[in-house]
Length: 142
Image (tube, rainbow, N blue to C red; front, top):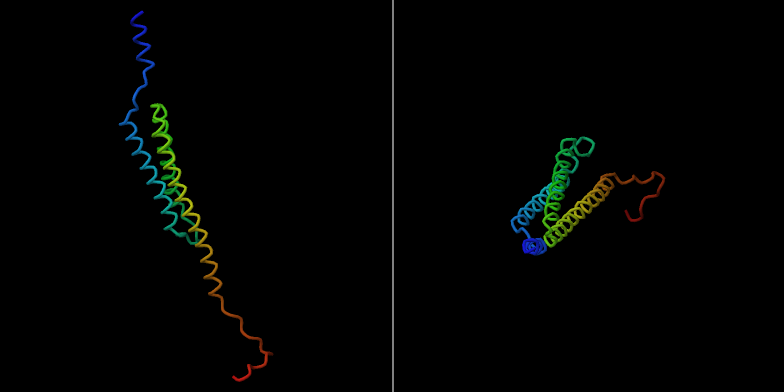
């Protein structure tokens, strides 16, 4: 009976979180964050390298593979932290990741919207002004 009580105490005792695992998952999250922001930066810097102003298939593949790798990394690190019952690290890292990626996505969207408005203004400025109609009288004093 003593062995059963000792086993019950060991099983019910709260275990300390694995700090090395949390550190490894934090590194995985930071690598995924870097890949995501790098992918967004590629999209911003490209500015339409194709002849029709769109991204080339190679750059789409490059950007998509970075985002896919980041997603797989974040899911795997989240599973490890969840299985380790390290809820604080899982919550903190997930919130930081979502906030930083959200800010980056907002910058990406605002830049694209601003670039489109800039292109519209540039094309409007490039159009020549209409010539005056020939049947208008000349200006007085000139």
